[in-house]
Image (spheres, rainbow, N blue to C red):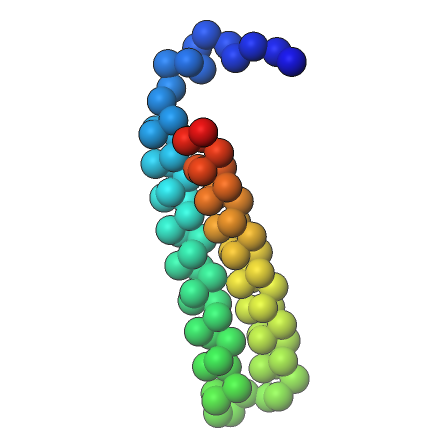
Length: 82
């Protein structure tokens, strides 16, 4: 296993964690917005049912990706504090 390069030792774990915390908040906000939108779409009037279904599927995919990004940011941050 390789040793850590000298230049990376100057970067504190707190700096890495702060960066990923910002990404965590952004991804969590995107996931929350997508989940709320999933529940709003069925009540839209004047929108064809097929289009609503496509929008709901897209929002489910977006929410899943945002939740995965949130989890990844959390794991990187908790790993950097070890």
